[in-house]
Image (tube, rainbow, N blue to C red):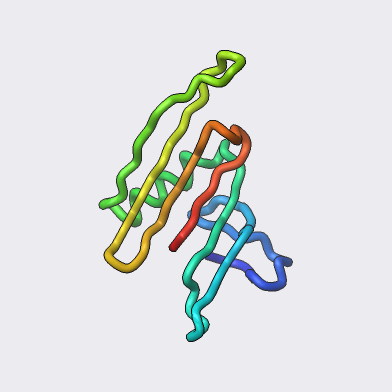
Length: 104
């Protein structure tokens, strides 16, 4: 991750995708325990490719949701988990223009 999380002056990029952090938390040892990164959904496949290339054990579940007005919207949940933590990449039908990546 590049940029300055606290000053928010330099946009962050994750896997070459620009976005912004919407939440972070740290433990008492000042270690990052959680970070939420939001980005434009049109860049989802770029970040998905980067995640799977860096962590080949990642698993992605693709599905499709039909909205109330009959539109078919892709929905994807990718996960990479270890015994201690995980990375989750989510594109959900509830918000077709924004996607989310979070680390816990």
